[in-house]
Image 1: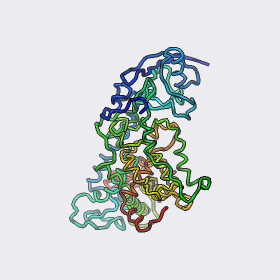
Image 2: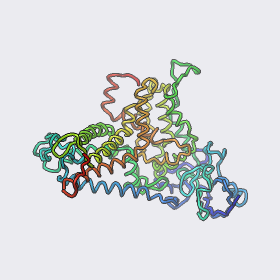
Image 3: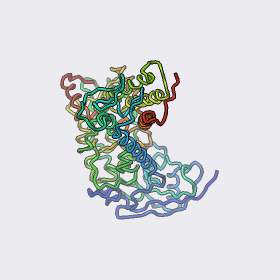
Image 4: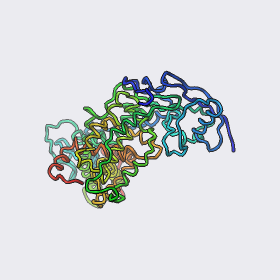
Length: 273
Length: 256
């Protein structure tokens, strides 16, 4: 290099030998810590709530509603849900909560999601905590090694998330019944489920892997006009991926909590017709 | 027109050492931080070193860190600060300092040279290139880059880990790889160059953990992470980590 100030290959971050001699790890004067703190608190709250509900193995069905945490229910110990998302695939040997079997897919989808990666790398791992704020780690290999190299399987979780969203759509259709399985009815829970499934689909489709699959991988959009349109549509949703990630996270928790209130007898579903 | 005295801390020094020096300097309506640095040069610190050129946010020369945030001095209005605030200006902290606010950004030129250039299609002569607008839209967004290197400066992969510099090209040059890989006429693959694979293997794409600081600081508003780095990661997945895509490409061998 022209000036003879070649970087030293020792790991000292912003205090490395030839850089400007400034002791402070950062000089930001704004509330840079607020966003990662709020993010971490929000994610932590969801983790605590969903862990409780997933392992509870109770209060997840109140006709005609089934909690999205327990759908599809694929073990013998599931509650009987008439025409519901039951399928005794795992048999009787599965003794713990059947939610665990299915939650691995939406959990994997969100864990490997490009937005959530940013959120927890910043919020929990401080890598970095905020832009131009020094991270506390001595070494960094990013997503080049195990286990973080597994983030590259995000698209497979996306495929699984599509299947889960289809099942939740089926559950939403079932919510247009009354408690005696008669069609053509609607309650407050139906509205909760409708909002939830709309947000789940919007979040799923706005995924970066989806954007790549529908058209982003192409070199010549002009030769694939339909895929180009699909890519543009997904791109518009993708610009709101963060918002949709949070909105759908809250909505799925609200839908589950609503079913919990009904199933535990704390609340009666107001029926519209 | 109103004016006031602002408090500034400006880093002065060179590779041997230095520190923040206090200044009180006049600020007038409509001025930007670079105006104030120029006033400092004119009135109090004639030997203050600062790199600048266009004063219009287009040359990318006056990159610095203002109150700890990587920004262009010429595009940072004084009106974004309160009059009571002390404004700290330092050189970019990811690169070796030369003197005062000037850093050696040679790392970036070295990384630029490591990205193989556009490969012209063999069947077309210069002047015969024809491209549809929708095919070049994506690359054109990346061509707005003014090479201010704020994204390179803020990226924690090299900012906080000097040892990663040999392996990691940084967001600006991974975006260049993405631009070329999305270019409708780039014939790199015909010449045996797989940009999707080399992005991961030679330019360190895997180091990026998509925390979006590059996008946050880009003065041109380029969506570096969403439109370049993540699509490039997905393309690398096609080549290296997705057995179905790999199998499909072996069976069909059809270029998209």
